[in-house]
Image (cartoon, rainbow over all chains, first blue to last red):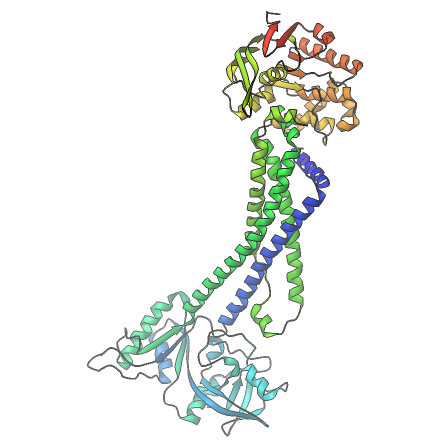
Length: 415
Length: 225
């Protein structure tokens, strides 16, 4: 009954102040749209950048040798430390916390030819473990380098998707033969398109990747460019790093504390920092949206002040009938909440529509790839509801306090 | 029932102070039916507001049913208005958007009466003033007399000991006015204390006692009735 009365009051008010309430409602709708869309685009961006982060590989550590900077066991500083193929197995054996590992060789400026197309690009000699670790996933119909390719030093090549486009255009590449510096290779796969943010030696999409053993045979490299490994548990990355330093230090005779002898670069730390930046960015977007909504809240408060003024007499009557402060306040609080929530629901509805439409538009452009698709996550829904609720309460509380402080004697005289 | 001692009420509007009541001593017993008369500006309405706990005195003591009132908080006063006092106004003061039935329900809502009981009670009191068949009408659809009867039902629905009426017949034709006064007389017999402000000597004649106010003081009628 009480609830019903309040609803009727609201409807009566709606009729009386139709224009004002409509405008305020629109302000709330707009505020909600701006906050939700900003957050949704922020979330989409976060996810696409996160994906791009993982383009390099998830939870991996890249290690390479440097020069000793601390004398060790009677040897002076300035010694070069370089790793070889065997270190991959050695590392896996000595540090069981390592899930996967692989090494790579690198050669720049290799001329790569298919029919009349020749480009000068990098060639990587890698281990099969790169498929998972470094996200070299093959497109349909292809495959990545496997154990047998390694064992038999096969002349097979896996192409980055942009390199493939440059060589083949729209033509199918798998099964075709290309020439790397006069040596024919068979294309076994093309990399799935991926976004890649972190990188060393350039993006993966421009590389030609061959088995490490084949690479070594052709170019005769003695030392690997670097070794990549992935710990079993990303949380243990620091302990594993220490153990790796110890193991390699013991083998190559350098101080495990020597940061310049062994370089260990992990993407995890970068991912963490990056995620913090993204969360900060989202908060920033949320605050902007919140401001817009706050202004709408001022509109609601304004309407409620008018309502208080118009209902002064009614408030007096209710007080004479024994209404307490809370009774009077509840009515105005509920009304402002009704307006806010109604506007919020409408706003969210529009946002869902926008997100659906956006998702349906096929956007191939690079900027669209990086921007990602707006996503309304549970967190966004909760945050928005919370902000709406707070603003509804805030915009109701001041007018309702004014209402509750009405002097019944005065208001009953008030015409 | 009502025990007022040396009650003063001063309104300050800007710089000017107006002394509306200047030392009222008033005792009204239970089941009394009392009229308050006096020229406009004599402090009748102020006295009514104080008796009804809508307002508190500037100085003096007021006991309502033995309870000291002047130092109570707004919420405690609201409680008293809700439980012990029923108001009837000259201009009815019904909620225009609510039906007769809903208007009668209002004090029960503020009194926290459960919905089923509330509906039963509101209907019962609406029947008592003979408007059971008009329950779903809004005030605009009722006549003046009917509106005042709804207001009386509303004033009585919480079964208060004290009923205060401020010129209850002022806006009514003679016929309806008579009906209303009959109702008040009835209430006096049913154990309510009734205080009526009026200009109408005809009405005043029918009460047990007439209290006359002039310039914020009682000039006549403060002897025991």
